[in-house]
Length: 505
Image (cartoon, rainbow, N blue to C red; front, side):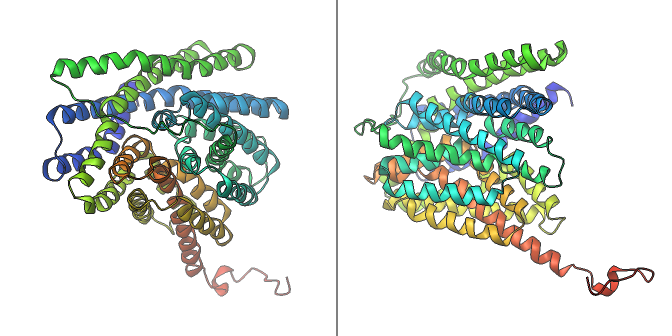
């Protein structure tokens, strides 16, 4: 496949994720919650930029970030030096997370914590847990043991933490394993897992996303004990109005330099780290180096376009739409609309289709791709409905995540370990870019309109989206086990007439 075709495919993937939201928003604004023409035009322009930027970014990331992860993983494998593997994992985990676009969008909505402090805190959390992932892979530590311990620690901290940090912490765990971070750390883990030659090495390469999602939750919860923040500054997200198309265009153009600086600051550490590794270890050929550098340029351009579209026009309408439905006495529409968007968004997410196919292969066909997609659609739709109920009623996030994670942790003991690893990895897959860019702002708008606390009631939307696949995928694992038992061949048919059966063994 040539580069042009690949770029077109990535843009189509981005469009398939955004299109359901555009269509649902169009229906709502025409028949339930009217907005001014200038605001709708800003949203449509933002949508175009989001699709274009996300497509270019995914194309660039696949040719740069994934390639860098594979090369560094292979280099670390050849070195077989534990200190080098752990040190590089920590550094790379921090710098790759700083460039994660979903985290940037989330941090821009959390105004009671400084933008850069939040990003750095979350990035350190990912870095430390990526280091832990390498230790787990190299020494074969069971994933179940680590999940039980760290989620137990999370629950203890959550019950004594500042309420304004709890929902943000769980959301941070969902957004950090996005389109930048997840492919990189997975490719790095597969390379390091190849050091081991035992039969469980490949299975242990799963679960990296699962553990790296824990780091941000813990780090943000701990941040609340040391950084009180400014409680007066709640994310307002004012909706701008435009007198004419020239003013609208100038608003977008004036925002571009800001995001150029942000993206440059985020990608520069990755670029410098790669050049150092190239000089001392990788020594890639000129053609390989040029491909990665071009990929980084596309990543940079895509991120700038993506963030401009999201922050100027796309997210702002989500927030305004949520407010309008409540103010126009149509609150009854918020829960079904949220659930409907969740159903279509997860079906349009390309990574979800990859996950469902993976489950079908692991289960040897006992769980079909179609049934997996259906279970994920139902679970994400339910997550969205619960998120909107929280925004309307103010029910605390812990009333949902504590029982949810307890169910997920109990299910671990009834499914094959590979299903647990895939399930906990899938949480980051399901909580794609749309959760942070539109669903969270929509919930914030509803919450503000009903007079709720945005920090405690609206945040947590991404967290619930990331939680539900942990349960649904493992339930599919139980279905797989039951189906395989039904298909077991009777003992009399397992052996040929010439084979000796040792009955006393």
